[in-house]
Image (tube, rainbow, N blue to C red):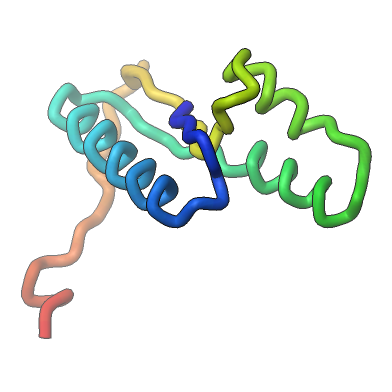
Length: 97
C-alpha cells in the first residue's frame, strides 16, 4: 500500500502516483505481475458519502496501523504461476500528434 499524510492533498496524490509508476515499472523489469486494488478505497469513500458505518474505512486504517498515515493506493504484486502474454501496447506513432 502507498500511504500519505493527507489523501485529499493533490501534491501528495501526485507523488503517490509517481511512486506507483516507479514501483510498477521496476516490477515489470523483474517480470512481476502488478495489479492495482482500487475497490477498498472506493468503498471507503462511498461509506463516507452515504454516511454509512465504516467497514472498508476501518480496514484501511488497520493496514497502516498509524493514524497519521492514510492508505491511498493498494496493489498486489507477485510472480505469475503460468506464463502469459504481455499487455497489448500501441506504438509511439499511434499516441503522438
